[in-house]
Image (cartoon, rainbow, N blue to C red; front, side, top):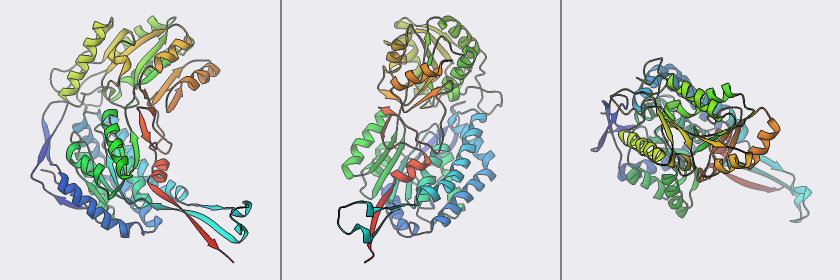
Length: 480
């Protein structure tokens, strides 16, 4: 049974949870889970460790991050297999995720020297307050304190890296709550952090429930900031409680990203990119292309080619190199997808379903033709391998359909007319608009997040996280 990591110490608890391989339903391992008391203790330990860690020179903190990246690289094969087994992510995609985590730690070490350097202000340019000509005014960035990080199930390595590495660079202590569906990868990374020389107490990794570990992180006044990735319903609940105690928040929530295919699009590219954008990791990505909106003049050809491409996807064991789609994360996720398909049929959709294995938590790659805004698939975030394809006749209708949800994470436009694409991009309610490429694009150093119910507080990204979860302090010196 795997213990929790409480301030660097491995602690066994009375409560535990089975971590199940969604590809076959078999138990991978049993993991201890923390409760309120363990979480409270982790916060206290973190607060104590913060006092000294926050004074550690930046060069020493970044050396730890670089050492973490090296150790992940040494252990990458074990991490990749573990990630694939507990998440159901195809091994090829698991390799990409671990590679990104390595780059995140290294990039953070590089970015920190620039982002945390502070500024000098020319106050002698201001008339008021009097005497500015004799003052030196500058700003410094200081760590926030103890930060809580709540991770999603779908990126246990990459999300860990995104939330932990910038906080370590800044000098914060951090308490991590991984998903109980995919906690093993995060526990392995927590061990690596301490092997890399992280001082005791600075990091805890606490698998556990939202009502226990999550609630304690949100409500504990010693926690000064929260970085969260997950569903909109959970994120809004966390944010509404966190602000009551003055916490800084970074809430990266759900998405229902539209892909708009214009009549002059490169149809072959649009099909290839859209299939990957929708079905990568069985559609369980927040910035998956979840709704496809195609001009009427190319609609039937697009559907035909898209469906043909979907038929060629191999659904199977995530550990096999040739697998394109693995399972969804749980039996509940399978039932959610079944309800979405049933609703689509009832509302006039024509459904194509691919094949799937008979075991595990698999759902077949599914295409819904004749999709419309009455369908659940076109109005909500569907976290699974279902691709609704709707038709539009003019640009205004395409924009209206794309904006017809409460979400606004990312969007894609396929068109040969760049001016038209830029015009449409201005009308879309989204945190990012990608022209002639996938909604899945993300640059780890740049801001990532959305509008509406896709995000609250500051956006995530190496630079943004360091700025949001640190304090800017103005210092004025009278030189007279």
